[in-house]
Length: 332
Picture (cartoon, rainbow, N blue to C red):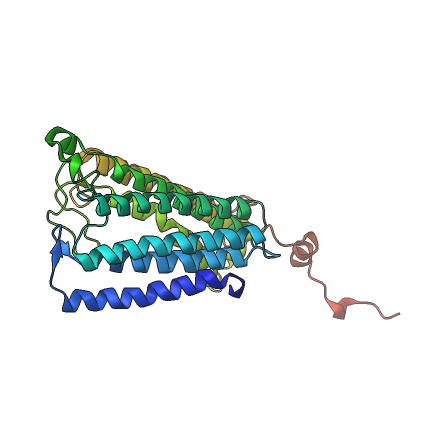
């Protein structure tokens, strides 16, 4: 990862900013839109730290190092730094960073954030294209990285839903001061879940944004867990089985992303699902369980512990079936 020092430095800077924001939660009792004012810088700093570190790790698997990859990494660093500078600066001023167009300065800063996040998305797309053209390890690792990037790009795009004017803002003429919102069906700033700050009385578009973005880390970590368990479970040593499990996990994450997006757009809180949401979740759970069972079947079709792995050679299988006994050899 040392080849992408800008991303590593950015991640360390975001980690330091997270510490500062955590201290701000303790010493600064100001509240903005129903939440402690330093909570947003804290969440964004942690998210960006993980984002930069993950991209650096993914790019380091591309050999030889790519000039295009380095430039895309630098672009992520610059745009992320601008984004966090605006969020932190507005926090210090006691102003909203997102959706705020009340003054010319607020409007300019919000528009700048829109441009930087669009450029960051394009830079991430360039990285995704670059890694789709390379082998990044075995097939399971390669596809965990590729699909994680695609889901992250989707999560970033879904964040654009929050920048659209709400029906309430259009009806009340609030577009002079605000444009867009986190919540659907209710104003921002109501009762919220601890730590995440997600609304508990209406839809919240931050949830699909979060699920998509952090698939970037979730899929590679899922594969890492499988590989860690392979020491105890011989079946997981088979590359094809690991690949199948990665594809099932990616399918589950994609469907979950669609489900929480649908739920949020209907103005429904995550912790108060209706019958339709619960039914869709039950179907998703059943499909994932069936997919997992199918993925764990040995490539040759067997499921029993005695079935030889498809990775074994013909000679190994023959040796198992007809063991060689030196003591039975006739002397020359």
